[in-house]
Image 1 (cartoon, rainbow, N blue to C red):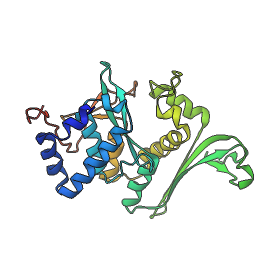
Image 2 (cartoon, rainbow, N blue to C red):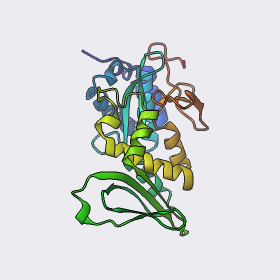
Image 3 (tube, rainbow, N blue to C red):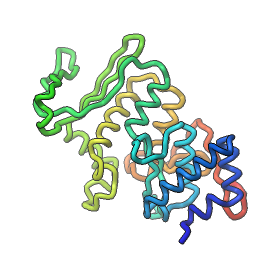
Image 4 (cartoon, helix red, strand yellow):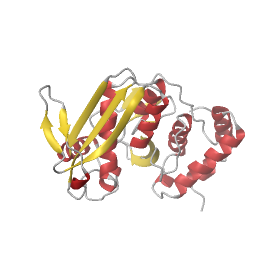
Amino acid sequence: MATKFSVAVKSDAYQNLINTTLGNKEVARTFVADIMTVVSQNPALQECDPASILSAGLMAQTLKLSLSQSLGYCYVLPFKNKNGLPKATFQLGYKGLIQLAQRSGQFRRLGVREVHEGEYIGQDEVGDDLFKFSHEFDSKPVVGYFAYFELLNGFKKTMYWTVEQCKAHAKRYSRSYGNGKGTDLWSEQFSLMAEKTVLKLLLNRYAPLSVELQKAVLADQAVIKEDGSMEYVDNVNEESDTKTNFDVPQIPNEDTGEIN
């Protein structure tokens, strides 16, 4: 049985939009195959509004981030909005953050890692965190996450969050975390989400963000709506709709071909 999306994406309206947005028919064919694979692998995504799936997929494509879930650059994930309607969201992975930052050509060093029990040794006189990283601690429990960068001009910054801080952040900003169902990324891949969160906060607060990286950060965890606004369906403490300064393809009605 065909899904709503597999039917919609074959419509003339959607095909014209994809070809126009991507500007290359071969790229467009590859994109359609990739996004249909993503949808076919996730039954919950198959119930989502087709326009939200296409918008999330096109965001990944315009950022030149692979949709392959196994690579971890970005994800198209289902959520229910405030009205209970299933929508697809664009979610950035920490590998995608690193790749976009590297493309800017401004970073000498950039990364994020787990911190094991015994590696954190306190702070220096100005409050910067200090570590003793060693393989002797590899078998110890993970107690936190450490992100860092150094620019080509010599500016350096780090950020360290404990596991407890990451859990508090997840509880505050994810409606699904801690509900016992284990259906959200925080529950399924806690370390990956924690690493992404610490790195994203570090870059967003202290690093020079390229236009491409700004676009990705704004779109992260959002339903990308037809008018270019972002609906952060899983972030209960942020504004539900945020206008962007970036062009987002307006998704037409698959039946009429008209822009909604």
